[in-house]
Length: 77
Picture 1 (tube, rainbow, N blue to C red):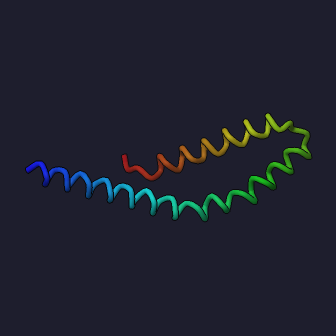
Picture 2 (picture 1 turned 180 degrees about the vertical axis):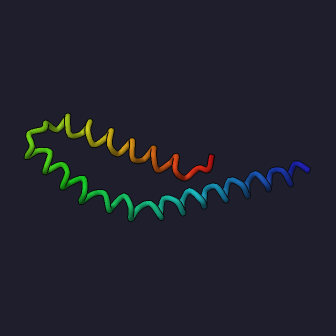
Picture 3 (picture 1 turned 135 degrees about the vertical axis):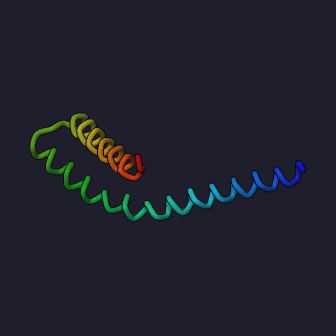
């Protein structure tokens, strides 16, 4: 009985690990696509006279809000 439970737990952990690896490999191209956008936005912000601290705070808030809205859109309420 205990071996059966242990096997199910091990299978569940392996499934979760596989799902996480699949998710990260699917997200890598998306993350790489943001690099040129972030670079261009940083150059424009620097030309507009924003300091590096202000740029970082502004972009962090913007991308965090974008991430949160995309997470909430995936769930059905």
